[in-house]
Image 1 (spheres, helix red, strand yellow):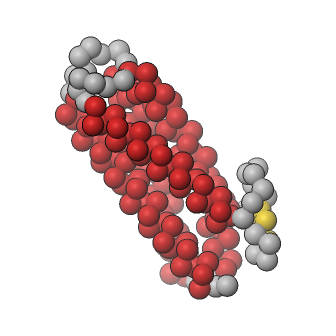
Image 2: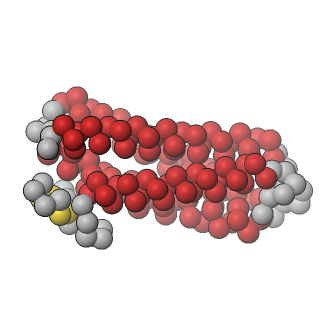
Length: 160
């Protein structure tokens, strides 16, 4: 398990030095930027889609999710659980967020695969279905980020 110093916010999990909540905001900003790219792709379907952008986003989704989720689960969640003195309802909420991470990863893998296929199809077949898939994914990811920011923020402020 990752050791976290509550007083100075330091952590050790192979991540850059910095306060866990500041780093979480950066991770969230990166996820939200990916959502914006996915939304732009969905908006460009079927005729104006950039095959290069689809491939670039497809190759970035899974590594981004893996890195962000590992950081959250190994650093941020334990940090917040320590701040909250092991409150069972908070621990249960973090278990829910971990389950959402698994769902996001599975969905992200499907989205990445679909976007890679766009590069080989002219015209894009199933553009409407792909648009719905992308919107479902980035919509869920945005809601997850929003809840996580609010929830972690409340814990951090309440426990200061």
